[in-house]
Length: 333
Figure 1 (cartoon, rainbow, N blue to C red):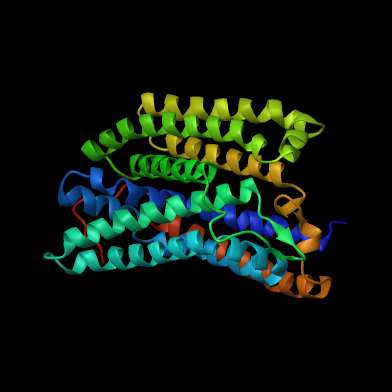
Figure 2: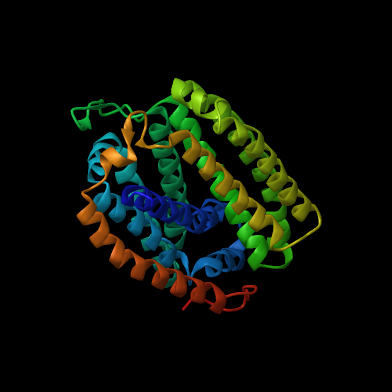
């Protein structure tokens, strides 16, 4: 029988991954917003995510709230270590949401809200990447509390991962627009997606090569069994996903590039999990050590087993209801 703490680690990981792949593409749409030609293309890009963008962020709330509820020690360590990037990310998401709603209600200030939509999306993505890089390079813990400095999160590696996430989200956004649009906007995004795909793969390669140097334990996990098996499987899987991405773009497919881009993100997330396990906060705070008492885990699990299927059902229904291509002539209501 699995330990409750590991079941909960799987739930939190699922929530974070779902947030990344769902909110990733709508943040990517915002990152690509300045490349739209004219108001109609901008409206089409926003309309492609209008019914779903705020629902995608449900998973961020679930992941953050779940971490606080069931891994309080991890939450207490991670938050002081990453206060600045997390606060900037949340402010950017708020400003982006306001810009999304307000730009439809003004003509005079529309350029300002366009900048807000682009800036909020880009800053949120960049801060998520920085937070990821800071986690990978490790957080100092002493006496069950954060023992590092205010600026420990800022390093060349975390800045690299910040840019990597921005480029990766832009790839998701481009392939989403390919899926949801037709005509000149789709063709433009096919061109952008090709270069963004190459950039994403380049960042994956560089970050993967640099990660083992952040902590010697990463070398051990990837080079010793069973990690050495994944050292062979994962690059092969990334190559297969990359082939599917570029083959789909070259063939003018609608869905294949988006699914392949999602596959790249899923594979990267699995790679991070292999590097971290069994820690929840590298380099030394394990899943079992950070977990709340079993009674709390059991109590929270009952509600989660009801809540998560409901979220999945209404999320799936929203995507099904608004399936198909976006009509450029229809406005946002």
